[in-house]
Image (tube, rainbow, N blue to C red; front, side):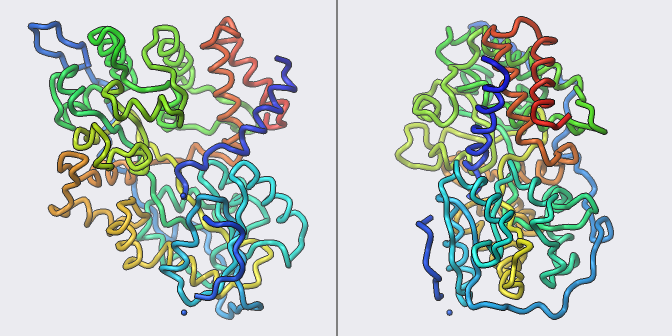
Length: 473
């Protein structure tokens, strides 16, 4: 395939990427008025993999404070110039549910698009300078939010009258440090934190790892070397009937969480050793049939969570819900647990931003406070939906609550594992062009795995050439 065609396909892919874990609404609404791991031989005990390079998931990064950011003059005279807040989102984001429950006195119009068309529609209306059509606030999935946070199409939260002291100390650091522009000014808030872990089938773990205990199982996933050894051993011991993951894509986002540098530094593409290694890991998974290669979000991918053929799935707590692990009708209900993986990563999240055309600043500030800052409301979100919210105090309390004993996890409280990860996530390696770059890298890796490119060096060269086509390097 010629590179120009590849670039066009990648751009098309970008429009649909990353909207799965963000928010699950109605059509464009009229204004709403509401007041390893060697697997043992039959007679032997399983050996635990060596983990000299294990990253301790409980080793947290230092929490940031308001002084770590550039705070502008906090507006004191914010007003509304209209009667209705215009909000842009996509079908499936469920933001109307949050608005109706936590902002009942605010009139709003929620303008929705198909996920694949959302970014293009948003770009067009923001660039038009049409204040009548442009949103007052809009939503962005984590996969592309940085693009807007870094742009002139969004305004600082300070312009809405929100000071950093209202939220910085309560939110997980990665969610605030990331929501900044090049001047370190915070421009977006999220009510979600989406730390990821490894959701594993306890019956399969007991059979093939010799233990179902989360801490012990964690050793089989503690490093990428341990993960690969576990993948090979489980595949061999089961005769290929059980795989460690359903599809190679399942570890793509977690693996990128191992990076410590941005893709592009001073206009030059950087290849960390961990990224070099991924080509080999992906190739091994592909050529040795260590996964079922189902493709994510396909019927086959979902089936592995029910039929006892897939040992683990990776992602935030939403992953468990998407897979139906908490569904009593799932044949594997009650046979799941959560442990940590080789990297501290997050997967998903939805940021709220006020546009430069916003003329409903008072109401937009109330929306942000009610949905992303108010502790009582955040506690209610956890209690009513089970999600992991962006408040350290709330999630620390839930992690220590002895009454949280979900049956689908055999009584294990998942929040301690997720809390350790959320406190440890460092996403300083994320840049505003990462959606394009990650997709180009993914394409290069797939080409190498499928034999369309003969060597890692050639795959890297094609990857860099694609980024030059994009104008990124």
